[in-house]
Image 1: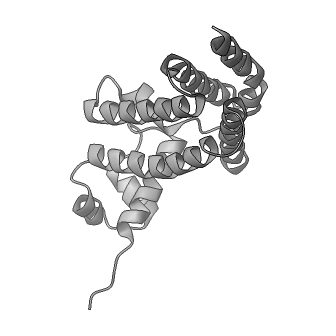
Image 2: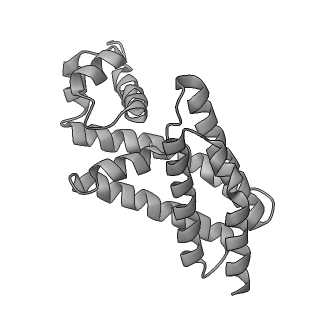
Length: 190
């Protein structure tokens, strides 16, 4: 009986870390393979192209993030309380990244969307699906007929993560929660 390889998982972990530290365009297959401790041939065994690899990394990252979002958004409390916890959890991830590597990582999905949305349609389409699902999840937490508000909340969170990355300051996400709460309150009374 042959030995089971964990090369695919190691490649995905390496890709997620490298995409978080730099960019899609700055990283090659050789570096991904070396970081994973896997032969370059293993990369092409599991992933026919770097683009397909990126989609697999995105999907793995989303699988974990979606579980976290689901847990937070379906927990007890008012919709505003649950969204506040989502913002707090997002800030915590950015604080952890900063304490680990000295820099706010930002959002992998946002980073890749900014870099690749005009050049890699397959990646752009997958990222659109993820952001649409995020809006659906926030909309479900807010209640019926709240898609516009849910879109505004996701856009606000994504924008705050981008600014936190730019300023290398994860506290920006939490410090802007009050303005998000006011937006939600104004939308509820409209």
